[in-house]
Image 1 (cartoon, rainbow, N blue to C red):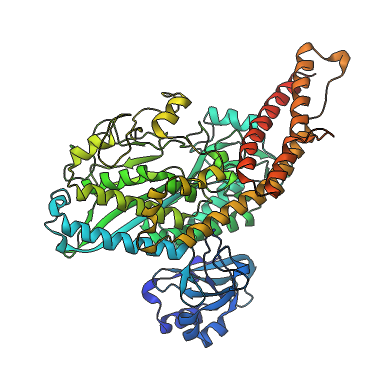
Image 2 (image 1 turned 90 degrees about the vertical axis):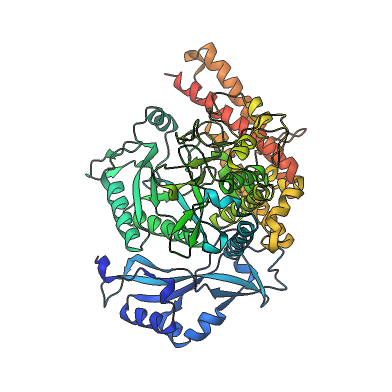
Length: 635
């Protein structure tokens, strides 16, 4: 395959009709065009429009887009069946990417058949713009305009920023980047939790050399992604996995490995679009090499899940061409951040309860966020023991990333998102929370040392902006140095299910107002999102998780013969059978736990179903642990 002959993107500067037509004519391997709208749940559209038809009606496609209806997207309470008209309108201000089908080779060009994917906005009923891309676009515009006004009104911060006054700022750049972790395996292979757990503890896989089809697929992916212009920084093995085995056929089988791919930051909206295309390429290339890829947050219980650490930064472009990081202090050896940086970090921490529903919105996501495995569960930050020693605390929710020799590198790393988090909504919520914190810091004209003291407050200490009965900063390992009770008291109670998480919208109405500034998240959008994730949670719990749990219950069968068993075997089997009955077997007088969960879901009693889901998870984990011990003790 000759990558040099293929067209991978059409940059925003080349979105004139003439340029588009010329590029498509010069690349006959591109057979289709797809306008990609993104609903509230993060799912995108992918209609196939023949290139010739697109070129023929290009004016209409670029201005009027294409139509779909509410049944094809997730927009509850907005695009109802009796009012379902939706237009998909191209976004002319971001890069467009060509998505290649490596299994379909064009006979004339001998190149893979391509589809030009155009990121687009969804418009309901002719004038109401909706969906994830719209929300992030509006959040970015609001942040930039509001911050520009704040900088003009409170010029004291410019001593920290290396420029004289706000009139020197030409524009504000909101930058973002994600780190994509994922699991790779050969089809139909089942995970051996004990082997994976042992390998993880021994760190046998982390950053090790890849081999066989994994190496081939990873290298091909990196080369293709670079052709898109993503500026790949690295691909490497993550902590999870076991060594692949070479089968009798000479091919590697039983592949079970965790990988990570990183690429350069971009503007917020472009970064989210880039991530979507990166996932498509990785999945297609690995599948072409006989490997399955999953972006689930926790595909294997008891082993490290996959995160998607999300980096956010804010810079100013000055009229003289310079770029100034608005988080970085003038003296990086003496100060951690500027007042803008401290305010932004405090805003995220204060309002994380209403950010978290966008970060952690599925059963799978909650499976990852458990103590251990470096998964962040507490609303707390680490900024470093001293200003001249950058923090590398991996146990906190959000960390300050700094490089004293490169102020432009100063940014925040939010560690809680996973590969299936809706990055558009996560970034939108994070930037709006940052804006609130910046506004509070600047309006009070707080200096960096004053804000450091506020951020470092102790439990029960009354300070400006942050809550009294909380702590927000720790340079300790929050899993080893605090008990679960201490973590809950100091950093807030962690939600355990999707239902508990989304209740934050009701429990923190004052914080929710932060998302509603300038109508970025309006009431109907928030209700649409609530209904979307709750319906997905309920459907998955009833139709996927409960059947899977029942399968596990049935697999835990009696294995011992009475004459060969010990008293320990009998005790373990008694515990196993009790758990099996509690979980999955009804009687005339009592319903088992799984049946009671289904009954609660059918009656829309989501809170009761949520509580029983937690009980179910505890019981199935205990069942698996005891059954492993029982099985190992038998000859």
